[in-house]
Image 1 (cartoon, rainbow, N blue to C red):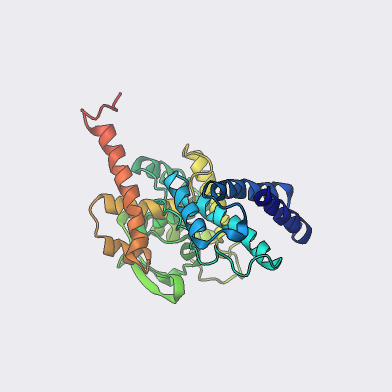
Image 2 (image 1 turned 90 degrees about the horizontal axis):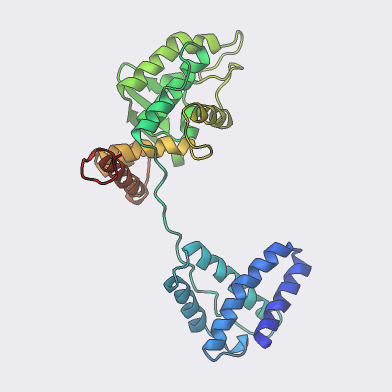
Length: 303
């Protein structure tokens, strides 16, 4: 049939010009066959007779059928490619899908650890070694302040004021912010500065970086990822689920779950929009539900 032939012509064109893999071409086919079937149900027998209304109605149908925003967006990309092929071949003089906006992807709440998991992670480093003191200070500081990992590894010694209990960091767009530090993190940083950092320093290698690698230079994001992965395994946390963002998320979710003001958390995280901070509110609600299920005698989930 003509509709299906148009799809196959597009796929042949893409295979020849863009050298797409067979699996990619099959993905396009899976997206487009339901679309042309829908057009046929609507009495449209040729793509040249379809309109923007047909495309918009199909996109709405996908959402009504429970398809995710990502699935709908991918289908629309395939449909646009089909119409672009028809325009290039001269069979159509306009693209009915051109100005149809794909649905916005749902904002998933950032993953946050519960307090017990955070405690196990923070207890994992061996503080009898200089590297362990450093790692303990880094983990405690991340959880205490919600810093991004890029901000953490960029810290210089003068950025942390142990006496006044705050850290100065540079956020996105060159915006500097001041974040308070809690007592546990302060103690860990003080221990590291006293007995960890001096032993990690290498003779003749001057640096003001706060957190030093075994080589004596500043810690990198990649190095910290490796450190975090090692301690996640030591703490018995699910492999692959813990990232530096997890501690930033836990910082925000735990504050919100305990009644912190959203605007204050927003400032500490360095978010430019309250909407970005609100995403952590869902994680906070889930954490409160876990606490309720574990503690309330009538929750029905206690063993």
